[in-house]
Image (cartoon, rainbow, N blue to C red):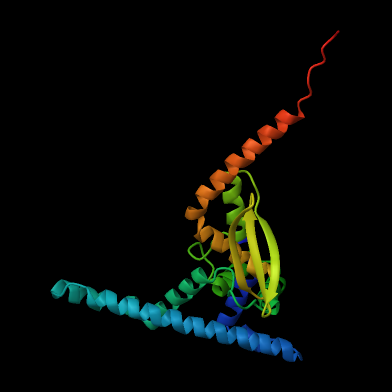
Length: 251
């Protein structure tokens, strides 16, 4: 749970959600620009997810059957179903699911993650090491953005485990080139191109996107990997046969 829940991107989202970026004291124009762009992207994505959730709920209400029972149900459950807080909470969960490991075109400022970790550490010190107090504060900070519904395994790890289960081989990542300040990364296995990405600002983020691309295309990649696995086994068998030394014949 910790490995999939605690990462810099998720904690950065938590910090922006609570507005903690406003309390960071610094004198760096570069950091200010990075923070401003990240917060702006967060708000744009939240607006998009909120609009999509409101649209989905309106469509769900429009297909409900008419009648006294339906009207009674809507009056008793309508507040929790259509309330603004519920809409925003669902939108935040949807955003965390879609960007579980950060935005594809922008890396989160690490200082946002540091602020959340420092806040939890300060609560631990001020409370005299009381874990119950720390847990309550951490729950209020992370909920509803980090919970079992919004946690998922990192694409790089998922791809590695999938390949090891399928063939026992490991993926290979290659930085091909830099295109307009974006890293072009390809991931392959047994000389089969699995996926690639040209959208990351650095090799790590592009590697993550390439791994996700491979996972999305896994069904069409399986036959190619199976064929490569057969060829590798045949080559290994031929290599072992050629290594055998002939028996000595006594005169």
